[in-house]
Length: 467
Image 1 (cartoon, rainbow, N blue to C red):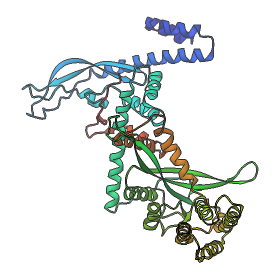
Image 2 (cartoon, rainbow, N blue to C red):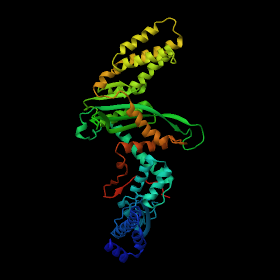
Image 3 (cartoon, rainbow, N blue to C red):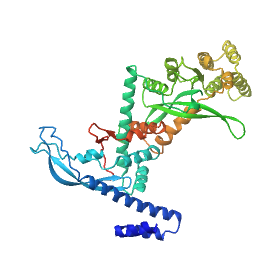
Image 4 (cartoon, rainbow, N blue to C red):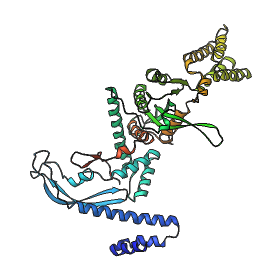
């Protein structure tokens, strides 16, 4: 440290305050913060030094896109971009058309760096802001970004970064779905060898979100719309310290759509193909009684695995029948429900249907009670192929759809249903796709620079200033 400190003092006296702060720090926390501040300052100097050197390289000027004449240099012009280590400033050559065509200033060096003409924040800083916004409100995310980088960042800038990244995520998904429509199936996502033979569990459910009735304008009554959520995961079992077999979700992937069930079906099927549904030895679909979700099973999944009706949802319908038939306040209703629930759980569906059938044969049965019992009876008959809970339990399969209910809480409720939150449909979708990219492991790919044909780096359009 003494040698490094002497070198820094000799080379740059401006570093003395940072070195003094390190020397005066008493606690470990104060020492780390002082060192971090020094490291940021050194990083800025290193980057600016490299940029200054590279800016002196000969510039290959392109032709004017309008008249075709070679651009002429107009000298060095300042440029600054907010980055993870602070504000970076450099000077680079800019060119204009010799005939004065309205093309603005062209800076080939910026294109080589992957910096667009109006970009004010670097790609890694935007990625950090979007990552924070995935979990916390935009104002809090902006504060975190400023805290980490030392650059003042506004919540509006973070919001705009999310819109750009969310749009990119949506475009990529649309491209993948278009390829699927033409018969091009996606590649199966790589997985750990130990997951290849474990069951693949699929589930779907819906959750309501508050939306603004007039887009970005705050006035008007809240409109509640359903977000359809799907989860796909491998059911990995192991023994815990108490020698009890425990099942955990591995390689969990989520699908969510603010839209119609048909959109959800296509996106869910695409993800099912990526998770190797055609290769999986055991596939199970778990859901409650929602028609749209069971329509997904009938249309896409029936030929690959077993459907299981959520046991607790089935029991809830049994209680509706008991309450209508025997009055839910009576001991007789609770006793019958307990017996019926036990029969259903242990594979005696016929006993439950027999009791309901006998009840429906009573001529003095009130009209509303009869209507409720008929619905419960039809519900159980419709799902009779999905109610063999004793067999499912013996096979180590789950009986409830808790995996998707948990996904709804994490993916939607924890971020989108805070106190006073209301969303425009566009703003909701952009952030939703970023949250999906995060949990599905594709978040980083949204911020990777793309190599162009001439060796330069091309990035997505930047539309916001950090301030």
